[in-house]
Image 1 (cartoon, one colour):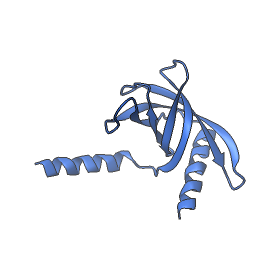
Image 2 (cartoon, helix red, strand yellow):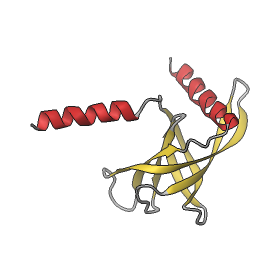
Image 3 (cartoon, rainbow, N blue to C red):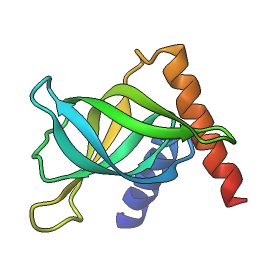
Image 4 (tube, rainbow, N blue to C red):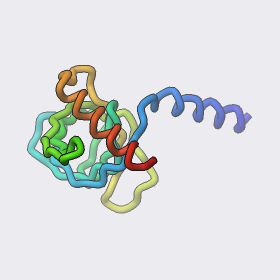
Length: 129
């Protein structure tokens, strides 16, 4: 029975993560539930969300506004990408004061922001090949 539960969970993750993630590895400023600015570490990013590591305690559904500095294009044009999303996963593998959170971007992303995210991810995927 445990095997079938594990297989179901693997299928759920495969379904949930439709977009390719790339390493981001930078500090980012974020605002949980419209409170004051906090700082965290964004481990990876996709066009659908980020994985955030922070000491700030967050709960499922917490709305977050991010300010993600990104370098786009062959000339490394710098932009500040502002995106909003909500905590959809809490990673319990961290110990001490740090916690990890899967944050899914909201469907309210502007076309410009979505294009910037896609360009960032595509350029990093190309660099890996």
